[in-house]
Length: 108
Image 1 (cartoon, rainbow, N blue to C red):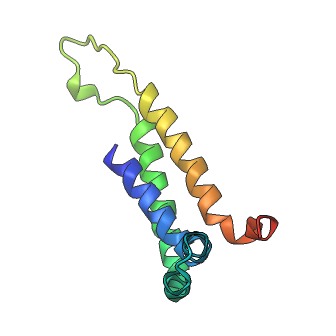
Image 2 (cartoon, rainbow, N blue to C red; image 1 turned 180 degrees about the vertical axis):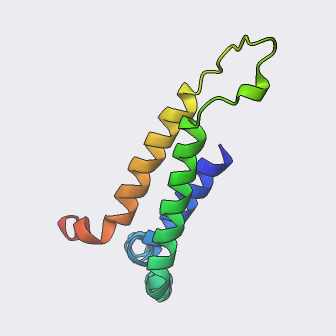
Image 3 (cartoon, rainbow, N blue to C red; image 1 turned 90 degrees about the vertical axis):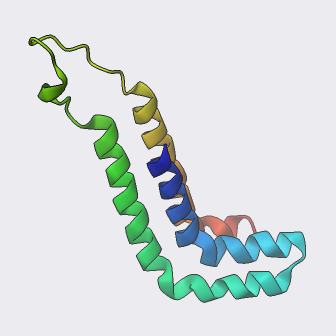
């Protein structure tokens, strides 16, 4: 869960240069929107961080079961269904936020 929140935070950071001005201008705070444009040079770093965190989320959701946790050769596999669903949702949200500069023109 912590990793999923970190991924969404990284994706928001990656798209802050583009979503920030739109969001703040809708609120009527144009100066705050202009200030968020200063994050544009850091966008590739935020995108890289987001990709690494999404990859970590998928690894955590799909990693193989550890054999050391088994007693007497009998294991009850733990369901990671929620982690898998959350990883896919976070990946979709991150992709939409990263691609925001390319489709923002349709909304303006």
